[in-house]
Image 1 (cartoon, rainbow, N blue to C red):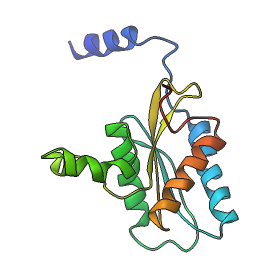
Image 2 (cartoon, one colour):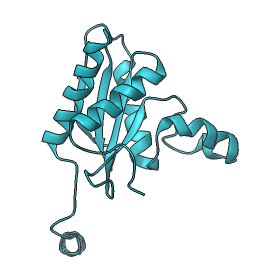
Image 3 (cartoon, rainbow, N blue to C red):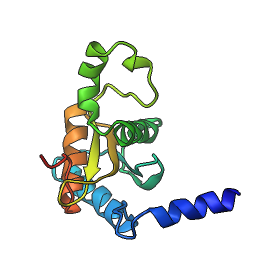
Image 4 (cartoon, rainbow, N blue to C red):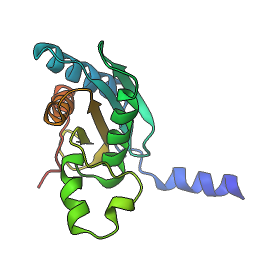
Length: 154
């Protein structure tokens, strides 16, 4: 019975459904790292798909223990919620109980990944190891370097 259910899900998914590809995730970490090197910075960078599964990670030199875990938490937060971690602090203030919800990170550095046309959410990027604004800028630079968007098309 379980096999029938899995087969039905695979048939129901359109063949053209956009998913985050390994090559795109690789381009994101390389773009973020290039941005960081140009500024003399080093980040731990994590790229996850919509399920929060790591697709690519890169720990630049100089990061201490825990930075990769934090970048993964940021990436998973935006994959789960669909908006940057920079907005989660305000969401916590305005939404009772949100702070206790799974995958909430209230520190900038997590940025969602959207398709090149900005219509399809693909996953999230988390960067950690520098000032929160620099972490967020690194993640956004990596997404742009891969030819993808960090904001949904309006």
